[in-house]
Length: 436
Ligand code: XUL
Ligand code: CO
Image 1 (tube, protein in one colour):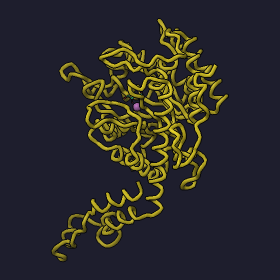
Image 2 (image 1 turned 180 degrees about the horizontal axis):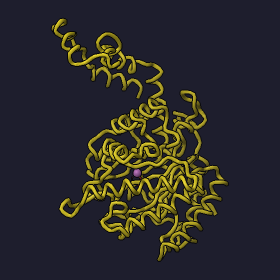
Image 3 (image 1 turned 90 degrees about the horizontal axis):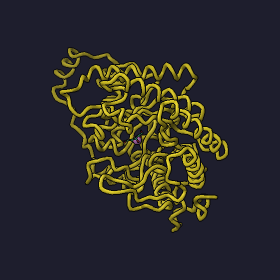
């Protein structure tokens, strides 16, 4: 029996539509900058928030009692939920999904039992993938919920926790490969610390580097060729997460010689928690060729935590899409909705409203970004702003043909620098508004 009998495949109806369950901007087959919107955006639905979110918060019980759940943590219930998840994604028209091992299958009494449960549900996921054509964007292991990871997983003071985490990632890599996953994510939920007095930071980071090398070795052994992604986030749950922002992650990847195989999964709400904009984080990772994928959501600037809201702001999505287009697209990563409906939006239909709104906001952002690029005014301004580097002394410096002595000789002769140009910030902000 379908879980959403009243919903048909969500259709593109164009900007004039007033149907809240239709796309006004996301027309998956429409070609923009030589590629379909579907291929540009590579939307993914997350299993954890969308199919395991309950609306519980530290102050109250679950509000989202899903009619398809039988209230048990059984494999049977997990299999039934998997069928519902695929019905949802198929009706939405989302080409990808992502999961943690423990989202899709229940943790057992032992590691062996957990692995068995995971295999049983993975077989159904595979069947549903084949039935619908929906693909796995990435898999990841949950190494933060169970109390065994209270001090960390790869960065735990307890070597057994490291060993358990390694076993969990080994299994999750096998399943991700089996399901044709295109990437594998590590979000270091407990990889950080609360108190520096009890922490050997250097030793913990060395262990994290070692853990990632073991993951690469095992991936190579089993023939998993997907990109590994680490996900910057500065705080929550720990006071200080090691992967605090794009720059910190990139420094870590370089220090431990991991850049051949690892890239970043950048998330909007994590960027803002780090005191950056999403655009900044994307530019930082992108210009170093380490931008792998994005977790699409938004925070609430009036709240200081990771609210994981669905993005609906065209300004934000246009900024993100400008960056993704600038760096040649996001594949083999995707636009993954690591976002959850509010506690008060407790009805199953709200899952559709949330995703349709988020996907449409990104589609609109893509259209805006493409128009800005076609018109070329913004790019021309930036090119002109740096034109002193295109010839003369600027070109010499960039070509390593100058040193402090030659620059001094040049400046002594010239005596003063050329007049500066205005940065025209207000004009450019106004210009962007023309397209929004
Ligand atoms: C946590 C977060 C995670 C990762 C996957 O803030 O973003 O859901 O995306 O573990
Ligand atoms: Co995330």
